[in-house]
Image 1: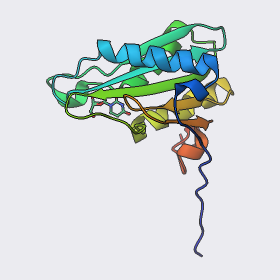
Image 2: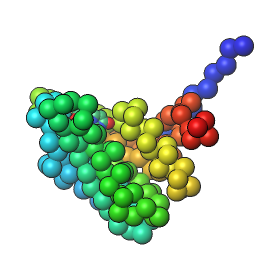
Image 3: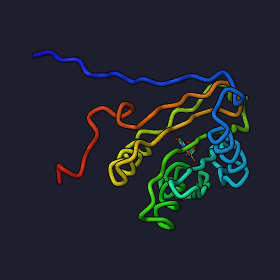
Image 4: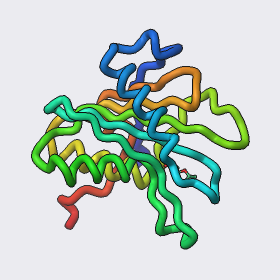
Length: 160
Ligand code: THU
């Protein structure tokens, strides 16, 4: 029996000025965080910032390693740091931006699948939809209200 299942609603904003001021500030902090990225191998600097339900902001960036798989994406660095510091506080929003040393990124970058897997469980843990904002170095912003539509057939802890 053939089935179809993929609906991914999202909003595109032409620039930061169109965003809610709280989201614009989160995105600005994600851009700031790209400056702390350690990416000597890919030369691709990713910054992320999360906003928690208590109003706190946590930022992070990708950190690479000479043993390549030991490095970690900006999204997971940031989400894990936020959960480590505020384990009982919901994460409401995540902004992700990037700056490449080799070209101008003027379209939003899409979080990798491993980070999306983590985002799903962040959302499930808190019970609060995770708003995800993605931008390149400049240009339009994609906003997703909740992560589950971004990850069909996710591996869930109910399978364990
Ligand atoms: N990277 C992220 O930080 N987030 C993503 O969603 C995709 C990729 C990092 C990993 C690596 O340090 C560099 O970008 C190139 O893949």
